[in-house]
Image (cartoon, rainbow, N blue to C red; front, side, top):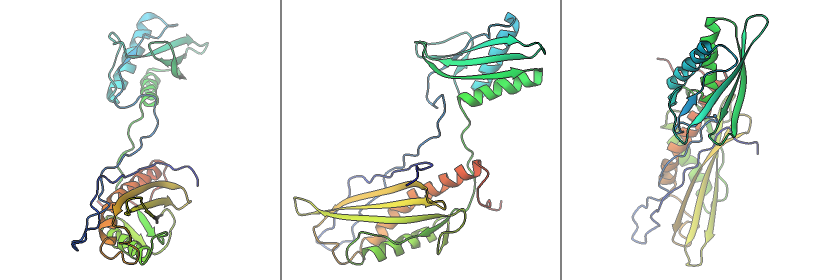
Length: 284
């Protein structure tokens, strides 16, 4: 399967098994989502950055460029400065040269305190306007702004569930469709352009103590067949209790999974919107 755009895995915590007293169990409860972040040179909780004066130009200009760059980084929520650092700081240095046409070419290097290089880039500045633009681009290079939340209507179809004994495949699929129909998504009968599909996979394995380990994985894919992420649920239940009927547990399982599935759909839509390929926005 093609490498996913983003992966979210929901892992269930300690869960209740099927009780002999006949109470409706609450298995496969949701716990938390661990959303992956887009790659960038500086992480949100990183150490600060010391911006050094640009060399190769007159000292006043070199210090001005450093000051503007530090300010641009601060706007990106990076602890940056030109006159203070700590043992863990990263160092951003610039090597400039004046071209024959009067423009300044600057090669930026981001390095750690041990001298190891994190990244490099080169910019050309030919005017005061380009100076401000260039420092903003350097800050964006180091720490891109987060993708803005886009209000969209994700479209999703529920495909057949596989692997469950008894009536599990049918009841789980129907239960998830009902849960998604109540969620802020557009449920479709089949895959549509710019839409998604959710497919369930179930395994039931008998354990040495006689109980059954039940694992339900909901796989979310986009219209191109790329896996966006999965929602995984797991529980130990009484051995054989789900061999024929899933009527008591299908809805609780689906209801516990739907929040993670919607989170995956929203993240996928945000990625597509950032690339200019998202669906229509909700009316304001």
